[in-house]
Image 1 (spheres, rainbow, N blue to C red):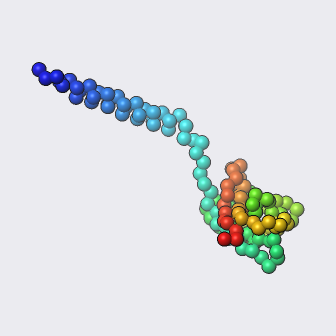
Image 2: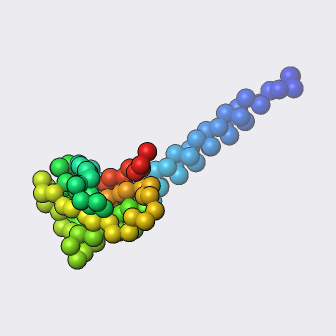
Image 3: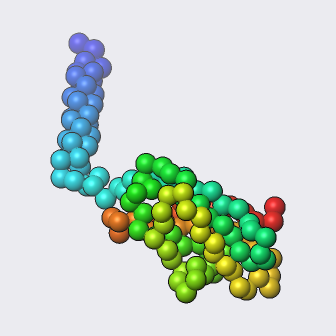
Length: 133
């Protein structure tokens, strides 16, 4: 009788048990909803351009699969909110331009972003760019 008799069946059994445990863990995670907290991104088309007025930026929602779900948009320059009349947020309409004004431009800005507030209660950055590069 050889010394290694029986080693192969033991290793095979251990591998089968390990594969079974991994499969059970994956299936139970899906069934018990552990993956339910993963959010989905919203798709919205945004066009941004500076205007002739110093410190003013034009934002246009041009469409996208989730454009109808927008409850509001806000514009930020280096995390400072821009003003749309007396508000920092506006309920957007697709195809209508919105001018956001930034009053404090004492230091050169570096980051501009547009954040969408959606009807499902989530906020998502829908446009972001570096300024002055």
